[in-house]
Length: 144
Image (cartoon, rainbow, N blue to C red):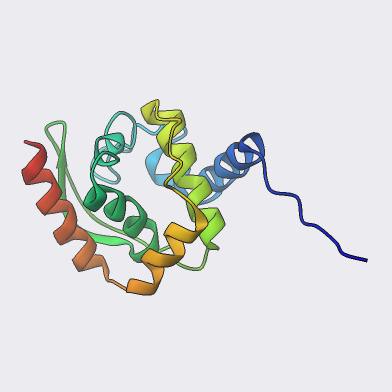
């Protein structure tokens, strides 16, 4: 007898993403994704700008995988801090929480590229908080 594992539906992934955001991200980035002044930058209407370019997608996945350290300036505010790594989460969970952030706070529901396989590929490359910060700085220059 062969058992099949049901593939999670989009609705299941959204529920899982929201639960993960609430558990791991909300304390700093706030329930509405607007961030906390001086502590954590906003996710709302900000991170979605990275999805249109491959290096931006790499950055989005690298942030929760490696964490990030350094000065971030957004919307005229500066944030100096250290985002911890959430590399202990499963690839599926990182994909789910990122999909939630993109859909809920940035209006991007088409993130078919954001799979557990993509996260696993990014994880296998390794990285560090400093490298993720450098990638962000490079992307920010290109978006100005």
